[in-house]
Length: 235
Ligand SMILES: Nc1nc2c(c(=O)[nH]1)N[C@H]1C(S)=C(S)[C@@H](COP(=O)(O)O)O[C@H]1N2
Ligand SMILES: [Mo]
Image 1 (cartoon, rainbow, N blue to C red):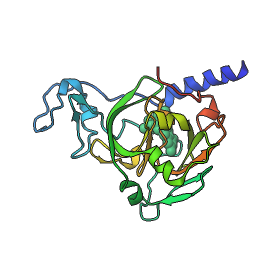
Image 2: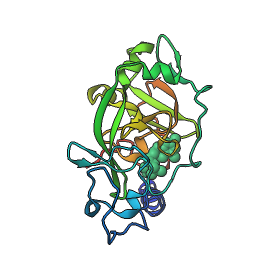
Image 3: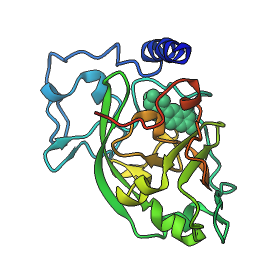
Image 4: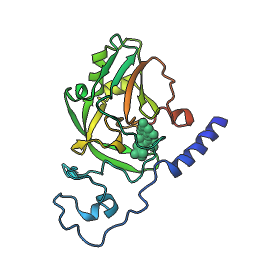
């Protein structure tokens, strides 16, 4: 019971702070002259428009895409800047061939592209066109031991979160290196973000540096150990 109240208190403070909607967003009066993309001004606020990066895809098959850089950053230690020359992605734990991959090793794998929405606990959401690798392909390279059932993601900022191995395989989850046609920006987790489709935002590990195979189904990551639901299903 005590735990429930702690959970509720944390949730309320989190809702207030962690995923605030764009406070400056408002509908513009005039049309956006000079815009070459199909995005219409009545479908997107001027504050949102100003966040698109140059050459960022703004529409995909009739769906408006949201900018890859959100209105605010709520990361536990701010935006991380990764030096790609020294960066390595470790795949270890319950595997028979522990790995250390470079950025290019990952980009060499078969690309997968999918339109997926990130849902924040406040109801805030962002739909982006993601491109990356299927996580199971990366896991296969390390040969996962049969007893593994949980995948723990470790990030450059010390953040961690986990997903069931079955969810990764069954839902063909991807680890993305591009959003809306461009490399994901530092703000979104460069070089890699786990696109935890159908799971709440706190499962979307950014600046991933280590993928650990585990048999601890009760593992709790940063927000999970602070009262957030470990299932994190959107519904
Ligand atoms: N490494 C790392 N990944 C992270 C976080 C973080 O603080 N550090 N925050 C999570 C949360 S709570 C959300 S909602 C998403 C998006 O965070 P944003 O709203 O700050 O863009 O990233 C997730 N991944
Ligand atoms: Mo979040």
